[in-house]
Image 1 (cartoon, rainbow, N blue to C red):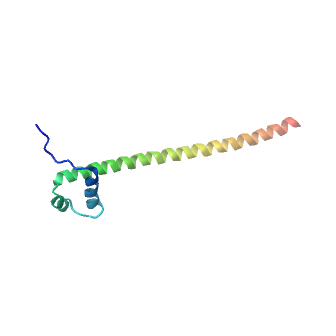
Image 2: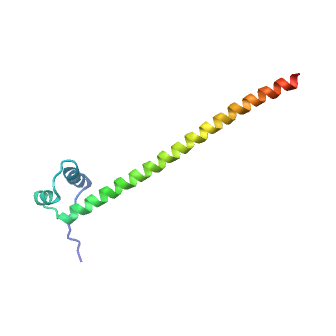
Image 3: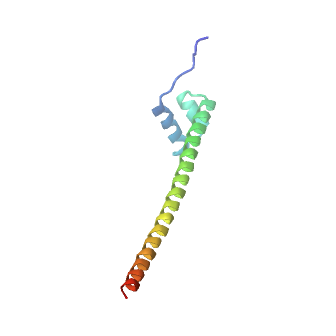
Length: 96
């Protein structure tokens, strides 16, 4: 069986999504204007939103990791300062 479905490039898909998401056009009107089925456009929107959700999730995870790393660095810097002070006190006591 031959695949007779139309193939659309990514640029075309992105333009359609922008018209709907950015300009507030309806799926029905875009479907009529460009001759693309409503379901195909809905599939593109679903794929686009899934990719956006994945990016948002990944960004949230990276932000959490960065926050934890900054906290760890701050704790380590405080530990270093305490050890420096303790070393200075021990050095003074050993000279007496």
